[in-house]
Length: 311
Image (cartoon, rainbow, N blue to C red; front, top):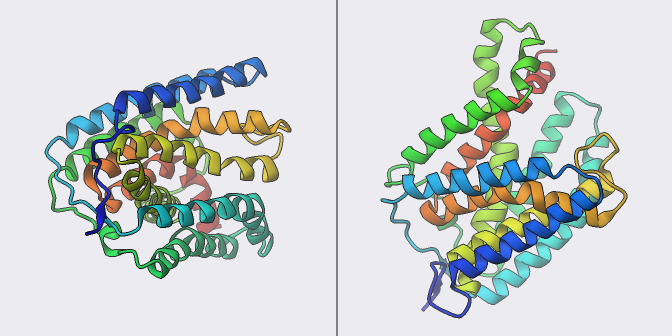
C-alpha cells in the first residue's frame, strides 16, 4: 500500500515542537542580522504578517477543506532525489545559470521569454521528469480543486488583503503612476502581467517547493506542520546561493558574508513560505497557491512588465 502524504502520529508529529524549532532558527537568523548591522525590522514584520497573521487566517478560511491525500510510493527515495535536485538547482541554476540565461539575450522581450522558458524547464519539467522516473504519480500534484471547499474563500480574502498591503507598503503604485500609461494600456497589461507572474514565479516555485518537496517531506516526517516548517526553511536556503553569487551591493540582503546572506533568506523569505505551505497542506490546490503567489508579486513587477511589452 502506498504511504500517504497526510500526517501520521509519531515522535516527530508534534506541531509545537516543529513551530518552536522554526522560531528558534528564525530567531538565530534575525539575531545574526542585527549583530552584523543588517535590517532586522523587516523580518519581524514579515513573520508577523506572512508567518502568523495570514496563515492563521488561512486556517480559518480552509476549515471546511477536505483535501484528498496524495500517494507517495517511496517517500525516502523520492525525498532524497528531490533534495539532491534542489542542491544542484540552488547552486548551479540560481547561483550561476540564471545569470547565464539573462546574458544570452539583451534586456527586453526576448530575454524575458528566455528566462520564462528556462524557469519552467528547471522548476516544473525537470522535477516532474525526475518523479516520473521514480514512478511517482504526478496528476494529484497539479489538480486545481477549484470546486472543492476551501478554495474560493482564501483566494478572495487573502488575495484582496495581499493586494491592499502592497498598495500601502510597496512603491509599486508610484512606479505605475510614473509610467503615465493610458487606461487602455493598463487594462490589458495588468491581467497579462498577472498571468505572466503566475507562470514565472507562482507555478515555478509552488510546484517545486510545495507540490513536489513539501508533499514528500510530509510523507517522510509524518507531520504536515513539520513539512511546512522544513519546506519553508529549505525554500529560503535555496535562494541563498543566487543572492551570494549573483547579488550586488544594491541587492537587498547581499553581503560578502555568506552567513549573513543565509540569515537574510531565512529571516525574510521563510515566513511567506509558511503561508503558501499552510495553504498547500490544507487544500492540496496548486492553482490556489499559484494565484496567491502571483498576487504577491504582480504589483511590484507591473511597471517593469509595462515597460518591457509596450516599449
